[in-house]
Image 1 (tube, one colour):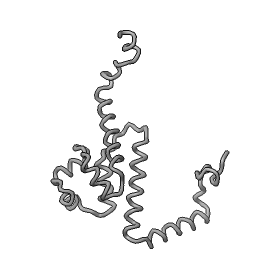
Image 2: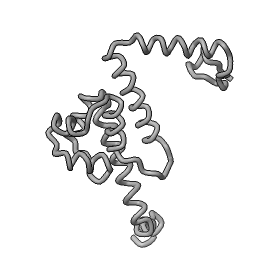
Image 3: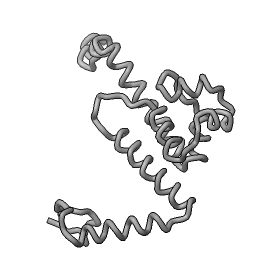
Image 4: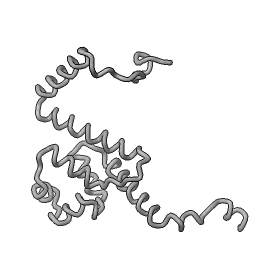
Length: 156
């Protein structure tokens, strides 16, 4: 089996009870504390991006609305919903619906989120598309199961 040096991946579970690990944690915490505000924001948004990618790639049937991730970004950056809505020219009730998953984001908003949070517009849209497909499939599962290549080939 290849080791970390060969692949860049960790292949064995990390022992979090060692002094070495605890020292490493302290080093990371010190680095984060000494980071500039801009660096701290980048770190927070990178963490959010990883969460979004994890959700996108998961097989979990639970739907997490795009608004959940917008809400997380605002929370991590201590931005009030009203301030955010005004900044992106969105009425507060519409933002509220977006955050609750009752309203979809559009392409323009995805581009705004990309510029603000440094998370690609494509990722925002991909999350929304995943959710829309999952909802549609849940509601119409029987309808879509009737379409098979076998029926098409033998009927045609």
